[in-house]
Image 1 (cartoon, rainbow, N blue to C red):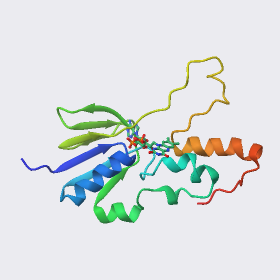
Image 2 (cartoon, rainbow, N blue to C red):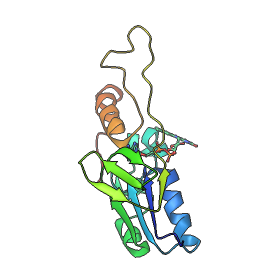
Image 3 (cartoon, helix red, strand yellow):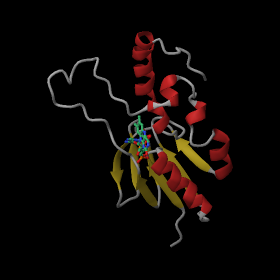
Image 4 (tube, protein in one colour):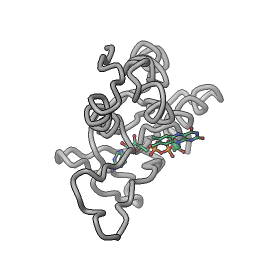
Length: 152
Ligand SMILES: Cc1cc2nc3c(=O)[nH]c(=O)nc-3n(C[C@H](O)[C@H](O)[C@H](O)COP(=O)(O)OP(=O)(O)OC[C@H]3O[C@@H](n4cnc5c(N)ncnc54)[C@H](O)[C@@H]3O)c2cc1C
């Protein structure tokens, strides 16, 4: 049976590269990426240019909305809550259910808070996603006298 649809849970660089390569290698079926953060973006700049405010949200995207449109790749802004691989179903947190012939799990990693005294303090921050970088920049800027601007 020909493969007609692929659903990728997680739109980090792994999920994005999977979608891009499927298209580059000739997969013409329905292709979707599910990620609560929407359009895939690159994470290394979160601790570098993005944190400094010298690269904007748009500038860290792995590809723009037009590229996804042109490639026929749907980006679903939602979180996968459960999988039913036997039936090829992904249940989203918002209650929707999506079906596909193949499901790719590319949900990456999460930051661990160290189990040490003080680890639970609100001044101990994680840096894993764009929201974390925004929060960290807000805290650091006044202390360091860094530029406070954020473009885009
Ligand atoms: C601040 C920072 C700086 C870094 N700097 C460097 C560097 O300089 N050089 C280097 O080589 N590497 C660096 N890395 C590591 C690199 O970014 C990772 O190796 C890479 O992001 C891993 O990609 P991934 O797609 O596997 O996972 P992730 O980037 O973690 O992407 C996973 C995606 O899955 C989504 N997701 C999670 N759960 C669900 C769910 N239930 N449903 C749907 N979507 C879900 C998340 O929102 C996320 O977008 C850095 C990482 C960070 C956080």
